[in-house]
Length: 469
Ligand code: 6PG
Image (tube, rainbow, N blue to C red; front, side):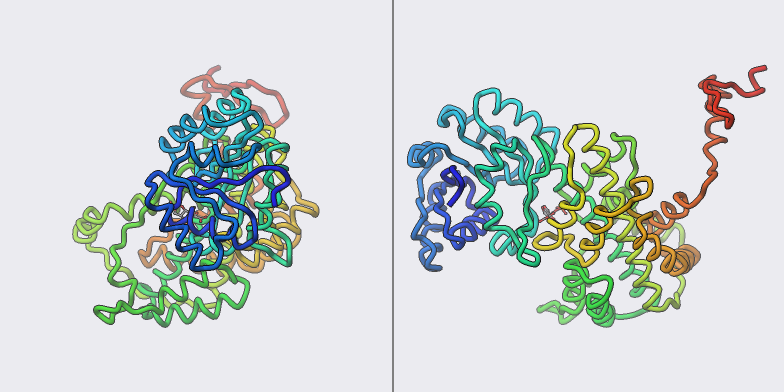
């Protein structure tokens, strides 16, 4: 039972069907429809087969569904992002009554969510942009959900959202993070971290496979062991499984029959773009986005491998160093994600509760890991300069693991193995522990060629160098 809203869902694709079954299983009433009406009948049958059709109302189209729902209504859109969302909003608008809510539960650029919120709310309805993470399995049995919208809209759907979310120690992994685009932004940053973590894992695999000559199944067994320690996480868990799987047709390791070109729908790129736009840099996330782009230039890489004739050197690293390096890379990518959240929260006046973000990410989502409890605790404690990496617990971890990250990156670099994300993490940590950097030279150059002025170390601003005397 929701606090007030009657619930509807449009879009019975893989994710929409899974979320609908989850909603019904938690005993909430649900109206559903789909762009192609024949899908509705098939879904109703599926729900019947699972014994979940008691509170399900199927409709042939949006107009029939909305007419059958008692106001106030909350309609979840589970459709491809972009134009289909705008088109559906325009179809819904004449059907709705004041106080009804539209919920976009797909991935969306938060700028677009802000625009849509303005548009829809000016017409007297409420709008929610909600990030949903966890893939099909999560949608069916409990995703993590990141909600953005007005507090009133949130209170109308809170029961159902908390009811269907994943739980961690009995607490729902869903929360409201602020108005308009806040929820979609938190999800975007989640995906940026997802890209970074996947790239760090892939690079670590690469060092073991192509540097140390280990087989995928051997490496998978190491990941399986790591998943019982400090690296415990969904992505390490599935990597262990992926690496130990065999291709049914050839009997080869499954990864060996997959073209090494990573796809992307854009959310990781949005994170990198937004970081730069907000005057930040999430260099580990940026490295991961870049690596996906370079991966798709397969032909060029084949040509490059012949032109530069650069076989990769054999490496001898120990598992403990690789584990510590991967852990540090992960810590930096989370830390950079939270810095972007902080910058956006300040710019858009969202007041995002970072400890809650970490808590919501502890279960259901793709980047769930045992580190997130420590991250939440760090945000509730004392954070010098607002930097997660300076919190007592993380500073100690970084001190302990930094030599291992350095050994791994140094060996990779001198052996010719590409590790853009691991090297970025090291570059970030080394920069953040350098009290006096080298930007004095940049300032001098700017002043030399453009009279841009600099701040003197004695505090005087707009100073010029002797090259202008
Ligand atoms: C999630 C995922 C999901 C995302 C896929 C694919 O949290 O469940 O982030 O929302 O769409 O992971 O993303 P890419 O195609 O960009 O890799």
